[in-house]
Image (cartoon, rainbow over all chains, first blue to last red; front, side, top):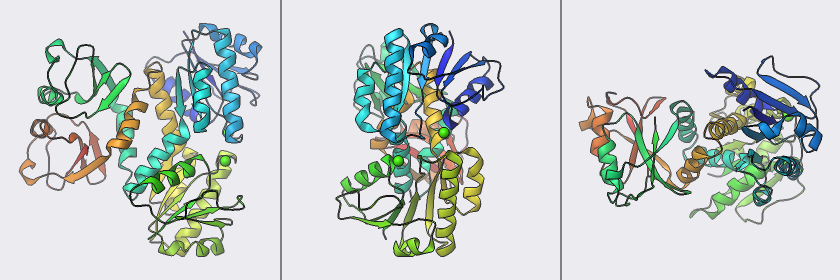
Length: 215
Length: 215
Ligand SMILES: [Ca+2]
Ligand SMILES: [Ca+2]
């Protein structure tokens, strides 16, 4: 399956470049309204000019066969207007092919709920993300610890795996001790949709829990 | 000392709200060119209307006495133009008060080096940050593991502390084992400016190293 990226900007440029550089480049359909032609020289990128919230554009992009859709926000618009555009695009895609997974960038906190109503599989709040990092920089007086850690996590990659059954009923402290000699670093537990990063030492591991680790 | 925030947008709104809600709210000077009046109702926020890359505005904001300056990017401009504005503001501030710490948001990767030349103490590449999270979401097929971890880290807070002297010459594996029964979770080692998140088990701890942990 191919991947569909809506919107050309610094973020999609970086993502396409990283996906192309990876060992197994994937086919990408890039949809943008304002560009005249393919902005990349990659043969893996197929460009479609058109309004993404119009059925014809989505059908041209063969979106119903896509593995994943990423809808990026057009920052050159007023923030609310940008979100309205993204949500309209999401509605168009989910209307035509409800089963295709969609990740959507949203700028204003108020429109997150509408993006979910429109069927977003994941909402990425880029402004909130940036605020978190800015606050962290403010608190650490410009040392940028969180930023550095992110840079490393990107390479290190996060993993999740089912907790081995012999850990059921044991504590997070026991799991940490047991993992101390592994190359992977245990950082938390995922239970259903809930994620606990560094839970209390006495946190009891249950069947179905997942271990979250840094490779 | 007060804090200066340049630019009113979703990011500065969120930051000001978080700083106000914290136990010890700090005095904030908000500088924005387009607003007519103080967009917040907080008594801790002093609003100055004016072009931030003009000496008079900076002097009015008493920036030379500030503890920290955060220059946010105006996303409503073309990305390069937004970066030019931010760098010009940075040059103005560093020209008038070179000792004040400045964190600056930069949108295009090409202008990071110029922001550093202009004296930025930290450059925050918000587009790159968002791309990292988008890529992580793509790789995890929309599960948003990295995003969830970030949300938790924000509450949990990262800490750094000097490695205790009895760890000198010991390995990261030994440190992990020794920390297994602590409430804090050891995730890496900082040596000078270099940060290693989950270094190899055999990584040797040296005098002056810092332990990076999650509270
Ligand atoms: Ca743009
Ligand atoms: Ca704006």
